[in-house]
Length: 406
Image 1 (spheres, rainbow, N blue to C red):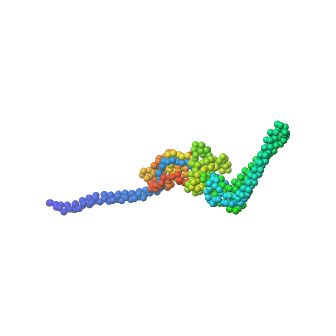
Image 2 (cartoon, rainbow, N blue to C red):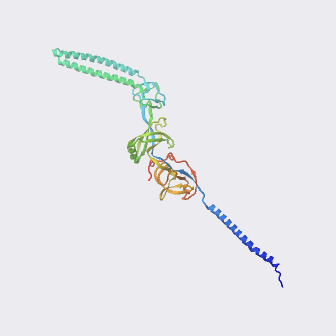
Image 3 (cartoon, rainbow, N blue to C red):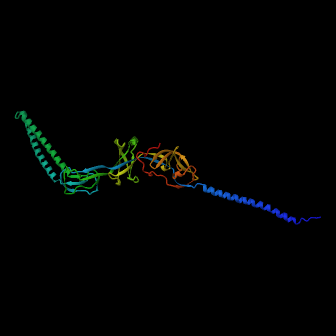
């Protein structure tokens, strides 16, 4: 008996397709699940990554670093004259305008000279009379001396005549002094400028009567070109200043009250001969040409004394310097916009600038703002700021300015 298996073949074929389908679907599902998981992991990792920190960055420079000593001072007229009358009389002429610049020898005020001219003429007449008497006494002395050998006249008469000559000679000399004094009084009637300067507000007008004993001046004349600034520095820096003065003339800059505007540049003239024991400071005097009249007497200024200049220093803003347990350091910017904490050796701190002797090179960039959010390896978004200048942060005190850092 022959069995027919033709109907079973299709059934076996249908049962064999299902496992093959599973073999294709299961790997696809696994791949989809793995892709989804990896995508979620990447999103989580991206969300967990820190964002770059926005900071200010300044390049390190190589430049000369000036060392200033800063003191508080006031402007003082180089010369001041309270001009008063030396004679009594009426003012005939005022030959200046208030606020006028005058030169040495210019005529300022004329006091009525006529009474003193009359006195001069009287003294000259008296001198002429006494000179005539002296000439006559000398002629008689010559006659008496010639007759003395003949015995016609006694020695006593000769001596008496000689004494008379000497007496009249003294009178003539006194008369000459009176004449000179009258001329001097006449000169005092014409008041001239003792030096070149600026006239202040006048206190008298033509027609006023003035006296030699008046306490108030007729005008005040001040010399503004040149002009002086007197300022103070701590006694600790005086040896350095004195040593530098022996080597060269020291430069002094005068700044405005807010310490932002440079008014003039002058030279240090001298140091006072004593220290104030109550403040521990000494006075120094600087002279300024003041050709543009930027300085006025009694004006308050900040005086910057240039003590020395450090050549070719590595300079960066003081704001970049941080201090930790291991010393001073900065956050230096790397090529990949990350930062690293770098130890530096501070050589000099001057106002808003700091010079370092190691740890940085010119061309490096350092962070000056936002360091509190950084650590080594932090990613940053730099905001480049212009290079530091010597005018930054001009609020250094007199005690700390220009002192090398320890």
